[in-house]
Length: 301
Image (cartoon, rainbow, N blue to C red):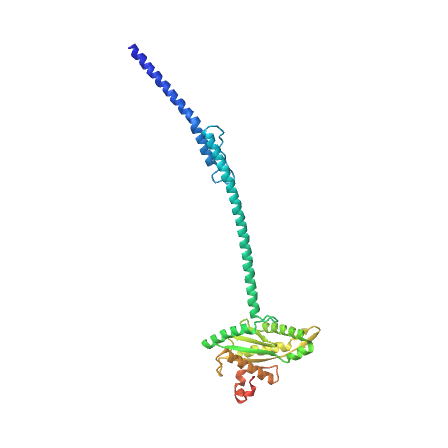
């Protein structure tokens, strides 16, 4: 019995010793293995998302974990340096791209401005700033065709300065240009907003009176004649008075003007009649159509 009890004590003592050894080994392993592993794991996650800061693994032991930490640290430093260089290149490329885009946008804006200026120059008279004949013919063609199609009224006025050559010969061409510019402004100021004014060339202007029948067009034309006659044109120290003659044609009319050319020819014939009958007057083609049929010489060739 006593031997059995001693045997049990020996077994218990040995079991306790084994347990203590196991606990010691576990603690040693935790300190030697788990602690470095935890330190490495925490260091690896410490600077995630922070590209400007590199957290090194704080291990300096001479064992395998220390060697692993040094390799990790070296790799991290190399990656951080490579990332810094790459970000620098990306920033430089972005800056160059923004600069290039700014230059392209400026060039595009400048090209647009130049194109708009070229278009403006192509459709306007350089002396007066009014539409030139080419653009006026485009506008007139559209309006006249629509009015003919829908049987709506439109009228054409041709305005010509009387004895303009005398102004150039007496006061010089510079004075003549000033008269033309001022006349363009006067005509513009005394037309309706819907009307279109153009300089045909020389001392001749033309007005498209949109949606104006014969009566309205004659009122517009007579008002222009009176305003011009009453105005004093300043040319240096000289004041000049001028008069204008006007020819008017309207559609629809009884003389079968079916095209813009025919309507223009009618207005031009009316202007020619005003010139031959003493100038400074307004003539509507409808008033002279029968006379022209009887006396074809009244038509301007």
